[in-house]
Length: 399
Image (cartoon, rainbow, N blue to C red; front, side):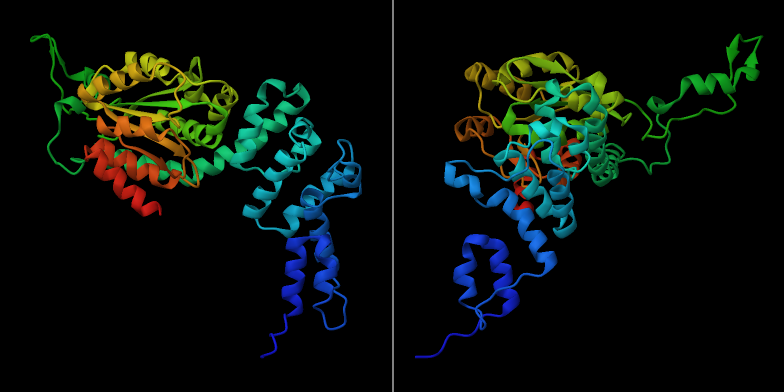
């Protein structure tokens, strides 16, 4: 019988950090000298992890606690430790576990605590769910946290979305033939007033000025209709920021709507500041998708040049049969309709499969989309590509 390979000390220490204090006895027995000593830095890492994942002395009394009392400076140190010792993606997971497992949600209402957390999209979702309870002294700090995440998303997506929209709409951008629809009448008249012919009583322009195709306004209507139920938090954050990017493009007439059992039109806020828009969202509550779609129908004036993006997991609490009929009529009129079951980094949705199948049968693709794929989806939809083929290709490329 062959003797098992000895386990390296560094590997044992990593296992000790993963398994926690309860593994001391077993792992010490695997060391040659019977003692597994963590370095000073590893001990601090271990304490940071133990605060969330280990049982404490109070567990023997039937309580589980991280020892992160509300007013304790230990919490600020813990928040600093996890950021010092772990990469950003790991900090996000640990921080979210602390919020969910250790009741840190209430601590986020304290400005000194909020300053120490790692800004990320999950934290924005948590702040949105607490927005009605954030005290005045914390509001500015909360806005700073949300703004940092919004700016990060815009940095990653804004230029790509602009290029996608302009690429789709400006297919004839290199044509040397001016288009009468592109004439800038106000500028042309103003620059040629000196050429007014008194005898003919007519303005004879010496030069006609044209908008560049990228400057012409409202080529398409794009409506973003977002489910603001609690399970859609990440999707709402991405949807709101992307909606604000759409609203900044003159080629698009953009509407941004959020719904639960009520409908909230966020269009004016999205045109000013996506941070204001996010704080206007109230996560949680029921879902009436049919009611929101009925509200959005009024903004469709040219169906053939309208894109309706419905962001929802399709768990309908309203009239499902009427919803399907309403969306079928929308597709029949020429509107391009897409249902994003999730707009999140994972792109993996939990959704009502039965309703998704019904929508697919009437020509509405339903799939979970990562934000990175949204520009490609937008460009393909505006170019008139077959939506089922387009979304199938995007789903494959996300795997």
